[in-house]
Image (cartoon, rainbow, N blue to C red; front, side, top):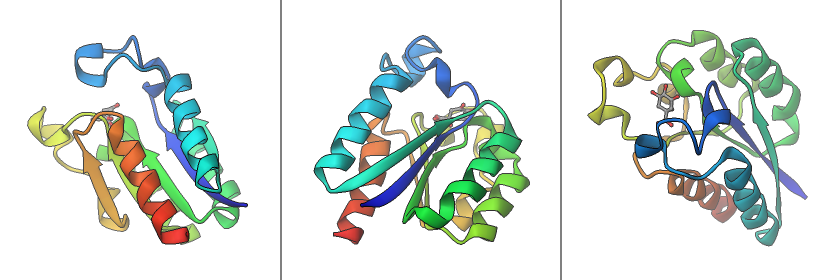
Length: 144
Ligand code: DQA
């Protein structure tokens, strides 16, 4: 079974309680369970990982990329400054979609820049958790 890697970065373990007016009421466990179910019914396996640590995210990309056909990543605040995560994506050569729950362009100016989006197929921002579903659907359509 083909695999898709899902990575959530710092503070996304707090989904459901973290600024719910921005990030919604769904917990990370609920989100991952929903995506895993959708993946399974599309004949794909979801490999889900969350970390608050940049190095652990890089280790995960290096470890899992060769076995996965795509990467869906919400890098959290690392989006805006982690050249190391960007380099990891380029190094392992994996098609990547960057997802943000909130519309980063309608928020503080420091969120308007992504150093990771230029090495991604695309970026989804502001659709809430539906952004993850859209990214997963895109990969599944391409695989099947
Ligand atoms: C976020 C947006 C980032 O700016 C922020 O640091 C996050 C979450 C989003 O999903 O909207 O942690 O990536």
